Amino acid sequence: MKSFWMPRGELIDVRLNRERGKSVTILGGISNHWDDLKFTLAPKTSTQYVKEFLLHIKPHITRDPNDSSRKLCVMVLDNHKSHWSASTVDLAHELGIQLEYMPPTASELNPVERMWSFFKQRWRQKLYDPELGISTENAPAFIIETLLEVGKHSKSLAKGPMNHMLMHCNPSLWKD
Image 1: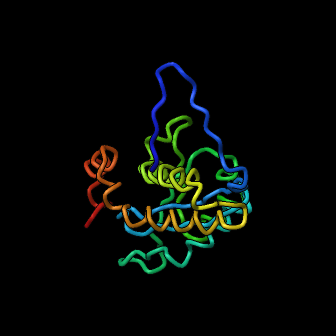
Image 2 (image 1 turned 90 degrees about the vertical axis):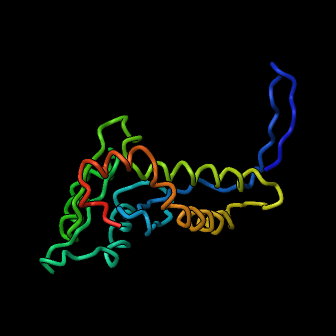
């Protein structure tokens, strides 16, 4: 990352690449062992794209070894209206996914937020690098590259205070 010096009290004039890409929504999650990152890219957060994400992760849902008809998948979501829609809830139930919702304004309680914070840091480094030339056309490829990079660090990202608290609440959920 490039650095520069500015006198104290003066404003920093940063010129951004105008072709750095349109808005892209990343729908994603990580396993409770922090070893399996799944994501999809969408033009916006809507019921349609949340349902597509649920279908995307369906093949990766593990089955309860004691009951092959029971799936072990709990998704922790924020309170976006697309997460609460009747069709999203119905599809999740049909797929065997239990949905749990964070309290409003408490996203920091969701351990996956550490991963998203790490992603945003890495993404901004790429976004503001003029040598990469990120554009509307190549932004999704760079986003995927960054997400894959984040996935490699997911185990170390899990070693935070929230994971420690969760392990003590219910250690059986966090077997190594």
